[in-house]
Each structure stands twice: as structure tokens, then as C-alpha cells.
Amino acid sequence: MKYTVMLTALLGTAMLAACGNDDKPTPAPTPAPTASTPAPSPEPTPEPTPTPTFTYKMLNELTGDQMFDTACSRVDFSDRAANFGAAPASFRTFGSNYTLGWTSTSDATLEDNSWYTYDGGKITSMLGGPTMLSSFTADPLRMQYAMRSEYGGNEPVIISAEYPASARHVQHVSQFIDRAWSGHSRQYCVFGAPTDIDDLPSSGVISYPSMGLTGTIYESGTRASDIRLASDGSSLTVDFAANTVTGSMKLQKRIRATADTAESWVDLAGTIPVSATIDRANRRIIGTTPPAGTSGNYGIHGWFFGPQAANIGFVFGDSVPAIGTFAASREVAPATSAARTR
Image (tube, rainbow, N blue to C red):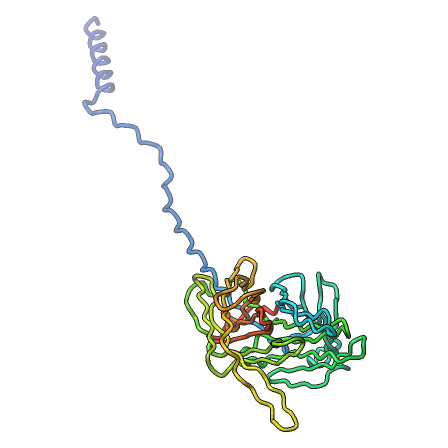
């Protein structure tokens, strides 16, 4: 009996030993699963910024009331009886408060519009209307109005795109103002579809081969002669990087017909130099420093017109005194899109 108990105890001890250690290593615990890191999404390719383009409308493409920035040159006579002659030219810079435009009675044709000058948006004078239109030519544009002064005199106004006809986005205005015995005035202005600053070339030296001019020269007292560009001897060059406008204007004056002689044009001595700066911030061309060969109240005022500065137009004046408007054109590639009309 005693041996039976001891055997049982030994067997129990052996079984416990067998259960507690089978001579194999305890496996490491399995780590908990982790979420995988997603691959980064590629950055979207940005859409390219479109290059802005512009469309510039001509006058006969515009409808409704319109107002235009303008530059003007003017000469005044203070006393006709005393024959004092012309005062120095005065100027209105492009983009000033002085503007011109029309009120439209019909959207059909330019002949139905009434033209005015404005200062600060308020009408200062009438240039012409349908009942005063004495002649009209569509291409190249020429509208002549027979205005009557308060003294009964004639005050002709001409709005044209003839100088040169290839400059289709800039127009000239000539105005005669009669003040009876107190004198008279002549004013010349340019206006049109101004080139947007973002459409203006920023580099390159470009010549404008097609040029035209209309104006008046006073050589003695109140005696005035019409002037135009001679067939050669004139030039205009723009350096868009240096922001300069340079050139020269070779003029002819008109000799009126008499009972014995036909009308003719004769060359004037010398040239009028062109020297001006492009003021991009204020959207204007301005030259007020008399270059060599000029004196007195010299001035160049204007801007570019049409796509990529295809046209240039400015008024001028010097101490002769001669005043007038000048325009020139060059060929550019066609462009389309947002309209720029004034």
C-alpha cells in the first residue's frame, strides 16, 4: 500500500513536468496588423493662362452713345483787327478730362449721330449733327459739318480717317471757331480705338511706313495755309523697349487757286522733328521738350490705336506756329476676342 502511494505521486510529478516543458521555444506574439500608407496623389497640372487678345472696332461698327479719349492742339487769335497773329499752340493731353463723342438717334449709320466735345463729362460745344452734315464719304471716312457761329459766320468741322486711309482705327478732327472781331481759333484732335496697355508691344524698334497729316500753318498775321505731308522726307520710328517715338515731318502748304493760277502745293523749308516718350502708366504719348530745330511751345500728344499698336496718332504744334494731327500705320497679324473701342 505504501508503494502504491509513492508510485502515484511519482507519476503525477512526471506528468506535470511533461505538461510544463516540451523542450520547444515559446513563439513570439503576432503583431497587430497596421494600415498601409497610400501612394501620394500626383499634383494636378495647372491650366495654362490664356494669352489675352483684343478686338478693336471701327466707328461704323459702334452703336449707341459713345465717348472717346482725345488729344488736341489749338491756336488762338485774340484780336483780328489789330492783326496780332497767332498765339503759341496750346494742348490737351490724351486721356484728360477733355473728350469727344456722339449721342445716337439711330444705330444705323454715322450720319444720324450728333457730335459734341465734353469736359469732365459735361458738354462744352457741338461739333455737328444730322441737319448740319454737308458732305459724307464712307471709305475713307470723311464727314463735314457746316456749323454756324453765333455771329453768323461759318465754322466748318471735319471728322475724317483719310490721313492716311490705312490707319483705320484713328480719326482726325479739325474745327474752326469764329469769335467775330475778337478773333478766331483752330483746333485739331485725334481719337479712335486706343490700344490696350496689355496689347502694347514691350520690345522692338518698329517703323510706321504709311503716314498722313492735316493741319494749318500761320506764317504772317492771321493768314493761314493748309498743310500736309510731302511725298517723301518724313519718317516715324517707335522703340517700344526704350519707350520713345522719334521722326520728322516734311510739310507742304497749299497755295490757293486764283483767277490766273490753279491750286498747288509747295514744300516748306526744313522739317518738324518728332520727339516724344511713351507713358504706359497714363496711356499717352507726350513730348514737350523742344528738340533741335524748334523753339517756343513745342508739343506732341497722342497714343496708339488698334491691335498691337497698328496705328499711332498724335497732335503737334510748334512756334511757327503750325498745328495739326498726324497718323501712321503698320501691318500687324490679325487678332480676335474682347472688344476695345475707346
